[in-house]
Image (tube, rainbow, N blue to C red; front, top):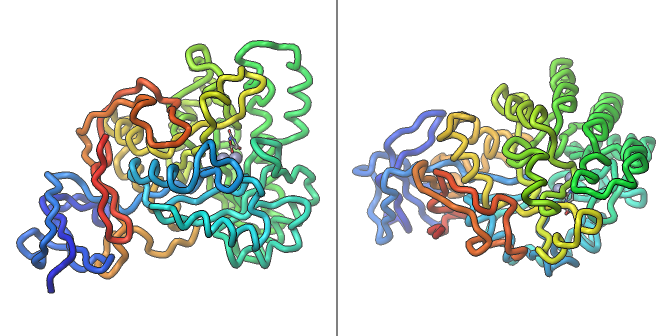
Length: 427
Ligand code: DOR
Ligand code: ZN
Ligand code: ZN
């Protein structure tokens, strides 16, 4: 056999160790994994120069903005950003315009998503109007997203009797209920209390840790009642993590995700970057930041995603009250994680669990990305030493900026392989 492409002079992350093997790809599939001398012939040979082939990494929490908000991002631009960041599979959130809450709208979004250069799955959104259609919608989406408090967009489900009903329907459909854990009632109390503040802290003060902790407490209680598979999105607090750990100990089917900014940044960063860092849930104190890093390392946090939520610089420049919440991130998470590996903050093995193994398991993606003969070739190739610097000029997202502007580090993807097609990543 003549293979379409062979990758040689690489190391493969295989069953938790690095081995000096290469691989061959034919018709989109991995057809051989062996020492370079044992690979089949091919006209296209890629020299990986000692770099490491990983299973195709994922980001299960992104907002690509199409339909309805395409001046911020669209399926082509934002999927290119993912590809550049070494991400081969994304899951896209439902708070577009219109929101992805009916089968028809899911099918419509799939048409836009044909432009995607990475693999993807879609979330269905839950609102007061569509709870009865969850069973039908479940046939077309990977998972459901519930906003327990108001965030960017119009989706919200803050009445607990309705959340309970939604959990029950999602459980019947055997899907995962992914929760934006901000309790609306608690948020209203604190917003009232701090309404007269006029500084950069106002957003964070209006959504203190209690807002997240309360929502997680309620979500866990209702998940116990309905036996739904529960996933807490973008975890940011120590107190929330404690509740999740306890629930796991009790044997509940619960997972959680965090994002790079919750353990690499904290509220002190507002001073320099202002409303660019306005997000929901907000950046937290140093204490919470350290608790999230610890949760990553003691394996109580399951998944790393980015909550990639592009808004334009013009929108973000409107000041702390008016600026929309959210910031881009899909193209930088792997660099940041590899840099954290080099700094011995996180183990290499953990990065692969957080960005591949656990998301694949949680969202029933089968053997997606695994480096196995016969599997579709979805791979992320990384150079642990490659230097990077993030600037607005070199980002791929349509929004044109990064909250990590000016950051430098080591460790980057060099190639991303999507269904057998190889992209060389220029930085
Ligand atoms: O900061 C956020 N931005 N949090 C969300 O929940 C939504 C997101 C967005 O879509 O902009
Ligand atoms: Zn959210
Ligand atoms: Zn989000």
